[in-house]
Length: 250
Image 1: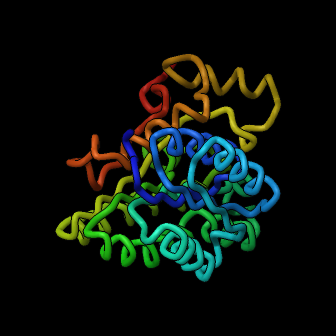
Image 2: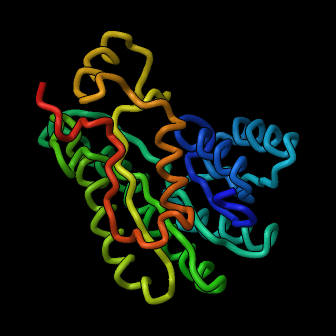
C-alpha cells in the first residue's frame, strides 16, 4: 500500500476531489485527518472509513483561518503521533467577472481560501513533518493562470498561480530536510464546483484533448502519486492533470 502507516491531512474533504482522495488514500493504508467547513458531511465520510476498518478523524473549519491549520496538525499529532503528508485541496472560484467590476470582498475571499490557506498550511505542516524526518505537501492549483487565462477568473488565476510560486520556493527551502512540495493542476472535474448545467459540461468537455471531464478519483489518484514514495524524486513541480486542456486548441 502506497501510504501504509502514513498520516495525511486532506482539506476540502467533504466532497469532490477531497472526498475521493479520502477513499483512495484510506485504501492505500493512510491514517487520515479530514478537514472542510461542512461538519455533517465530514462526519459521514469519516464514519464510513472507520466502519471499513480505516483510521480517520475529522475537524470542521475554514482554511482561511490560520488557527484552523494549526488545529488540523494538532489532531494528526495527538491522534496518530505525527504528520507525514498533506493534500491541501480546499478552494473556491468566487464570483466570476472582469476585475474592474469585481468587489474587493470577492478578491480578498478568493485569495484567503486559495492562497492564504496554503501559507497557513505550510507554516503548520512543515514543522510537524520536520519532526518525522520528512514528508510531502501537495497543493491543488490550476491550469487557469498557468497555461491559460480564462475571462472572468482573474482572482482565481492570481491565487492559483501564487500557489505554484510558493510551491517552488518551499521545495527549494525544505528539500534538504527531505520534505517534498508539489502543486497539482487539475482540468475540468465533475465536482459540485462544476455545477449541474449539462450544456456547460458539454462545452467544458470540448476544451480537453480527451474530450471529457475528469472524475474526482482521477485527480485524487494523481495526488496519491505525489504523496507516495513513487514520487520520491519529484519536488517543486506544477504537475498538470488536465486531460490535455492546456494544449488543446480544437
